[in-house]
Image (cartoon, rainbow, N blue to C red; front, side, top):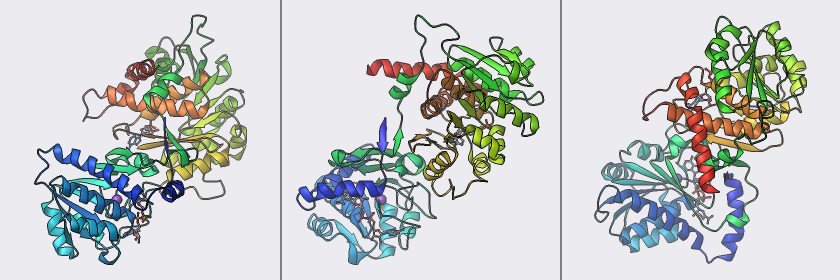
Amino acid sequence: MYGVWTPEQVATAEEPVLARTPEGALMRRAAHGAAQVALRMLAEGGPVVGTHVVVLVGAGNNGGDGLWAGVELRRRGVGVTAVLLAPDRAHPAGLAALRKARGRVVTDVEEGVAAVGRADLVLDAIVGTSGRGGLREPAPRLVAAIGCSVLAIDSPSGVDPLTGTVHDEAVTATETVTFGARKPVHVLNRARCGLVTLVDIGLGPELPDAPVRVLDAVDVGRAWPVPGPGDDKYTQGVVGVAAGSAVYPGAAVLASGAAALATSGMVRYAGSAAHEVRAAWPEVVATDHVADAGRVQAWAVGPGLGTGEDGAATLAHVLDAGVPVLADADAITLLGASSDLRARAAGNPVLVTPHAGEFARLVAELDGEFDPAADRVDAARRAAAALGVTVLLKGNATVVAAPDGRVLVHPAGSSWLATAGSGDVLSGVAGALLAAGLEPWWAGGCAAFVHARAAGIGAGRPGAPVPASHVRAAVPDAIREVRAAALAAS
Ligand SMILES: NC(=O)C1=CN([C@@H]2O[C@H](COP(=O)(O)OP(=O)(O)OC[C@H]3O[C@@H](n4cnc5c(N)ncnc54)[C@H](O)[C@@H]3O)[C@@H](O)[C@H]2O)[C@@H](O)CC1
Ligand SMILES: Nc1ncnc2c1ncn2[C@@H]1O[C@H](COP(=O)(O)OP(=O)(O)O)[C@@H](O)[C@H]1O
Ligand SMILES: [K+]
């Protein structure tokens, strides 16, 4: 597990470190780390001596990092051109050092555009953690001229460091090198950051508890339920899947199957697709109504359920059952439209798994601002607090927010999971984990992790779509992988 800190928290942590280190030392540490990454990137194309790097230098300390990194690159025989976007405000010491190292300094925008066009590598030192809003001219013109690899210093300029949202013209980095701590942009917008390298500049002891965390394979493997010698099918937790429908049985079949593959206890199914579920998964005990389903340790409710009276009655039944509940799809729409159902869920171990559209319906009747497009971590956290349930907001970066404020982010490796039915697979996996006793925040985080890995494995070789049934089929291999990681780490 690793932590992610807000730019504000990182700035606060920097203060005491700045106070006890010689002036400029922290920036030199950061710049040294950036230069190492730049040299590695250059070396991938052959000898670094004689290559040409352009540093886009903004007005703040981010520009200072870029200038000092340029100084180190000059010492390694790299040609360096610094393009100053705000010539009067470029970091004075860094600029003087680069001039001394015989780096070229350009202030004319046309000259800068031409230099960018000839570069082997661009260092984006336009703006870092203090960047706000869209890039101001002339930055967009220079960014638009980039045609080679880019190393973003701290964060890709034009992408909000706190939320990962993109404003107009922004840098798409091949790699990003960051300092002291990862910031939200690095997990919320992987596509813009590329590979992220973290350089230690000694902030560790000064950082508070991480407001956002990211699970790794070892965490997930350690948390995954494994039956012991004394276990039987009941003691491992029985999961009930309340999904439909006879017309569209796919959701029920996908969710039930995923539940059967995720943990080894028992799956019950209740709903109008009982016949189809039984045919596809003979091990699932299927009935038509939740009232006849028998005892379960958690319910996964919603996919294909319908949003009419029957669906509402089913949801009310499972929310009153006194066991953890995973609510997805139609169950989310029903919750959003009924304060009575929301009251039954609040304060209980409930995990809701909306995509963007379902999230909007879920919070429609709540007071306050919930805008995932502006800040998905904040939106999920507020929704979880307001509803008193754990919210897993789906998307390229999945956010899992508990009502007590804990947040996990799972950055997807690719976007192939955005395929019909893959959410039903996630429901089955997460429901099974709830039944096995994981609390909703962990169940959501572990399910999202294994779901994404299953998509990668199910696709076979990377670079092609993966249908939801292949994602489901790859769940056991994904579990094997995280368990192997946990065993290797112990
Ligand atoms: N405090 C320190 O000693 C350290 C700071 N570090 C670096 O310093 C950075 C933060 O430095 P600063 O706080 O000076 O701020 P930045 O350099 O991130 O940005 C501030 C400057 O960018 C301009 N700016 C803001 N938004 C803009 C936009 N949309 N378009 C164009 N220009 C924009 C502002 O007017 C201001 O001049 C970090 O990202 C990191 O790279 C590192 O060197 C580590 C140590
Ligand atoms: N752009 C994306 N990149 C990666 N994963 C995505 C992206 N968009 C959606 N997903 C994931 O795909 C799944 C889609 O779920 P959902 O929208 O409920 O689909 P369905 O209802 O068809 O089953 C979720 O796990 C979600 O996090
Ligand atoms: K930058």
